[in-house]
Length: 418
Image 1: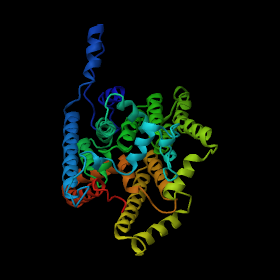
Image 2: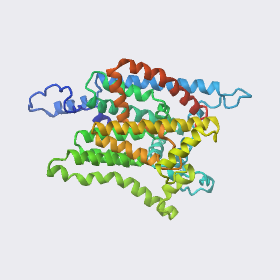
Image 3: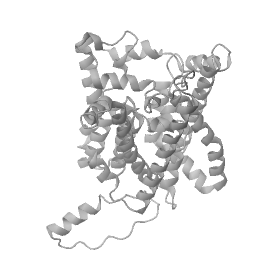
Image 4: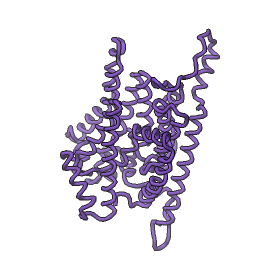
């Protein structure tokens, strides 16, 4: 993803009313050599970018340390006290689906690799498995390849997040503070393992930057890449459309409108592909329903079912805690939408509202805490609050850091989701 890094590390556009950028030097004739040097300089992160990357590296080491300790505290075989393979702690839950898709495809010809009835691998978009398979051609170990994808993607994502944050937080340290809040958030472990969140953000956040700079073709291409990874890419596409409608002022800009249909192409092609193999135009949705009860229910029914699961003593304690977290995340999301609407940040409000609608209209809530990782307006808003009130940062760290460790331990020990 070098083109993404170049764009992220390039010159930043300030939002109206923020601190002004240094004045540009008068345009002068330049030689090809000087032009090339200017372009090469854009590959070099500035001091703020290096600080963000240093913070990112430290938190990745912290995740590895947590994984190492968890492997020994909760050994694979308690009787023999064998901690098991070193990378086994990263091979949890959805990783097996991505691995099987990348290795065998959705509909393997080999009978021994055929999906089990409970597999429901059609529910997972092909973007991450395709990247995983490509990296595997260079990195022989599948798990290491998956971790490498998330590591590089996460670095691109945090650089882009810091630059998006600086558009809204002109204070010194606004970008780094936003990245810190994200990397210490309760579900941040999913950015470090072989899951889709880091790769999605590596496309989505540069796409949003491009939209802020009115580079609509680039924003559309990056959003299309995001839609290959997660259905959330369509929510981002809707937010881009809202932003385009609010900012387009001339006929030349409106001529770029067809570019915004590009993000719909990957889901459409995936739907056609699944139909060709299953005869079902709704194969993706039906796989979601079979595996995770994501058939449509009204928002109040979904809230009621989740509340009963969380506090009605009808589930085991670990599952009850999980659904309590789902309720809290939904409440936080609704509050965030209200704040964005109040601030008239309509595109971001649209993005989070669509995410809440998709996750909040199934049988019960599922994966909403993980989805908070994708809500960059949330982390920017929290960063602004902590910059204005330093004590809020202390409160955040004291409350969230233990939760982050608990979630990481439950994931690495195989106790996630009950």
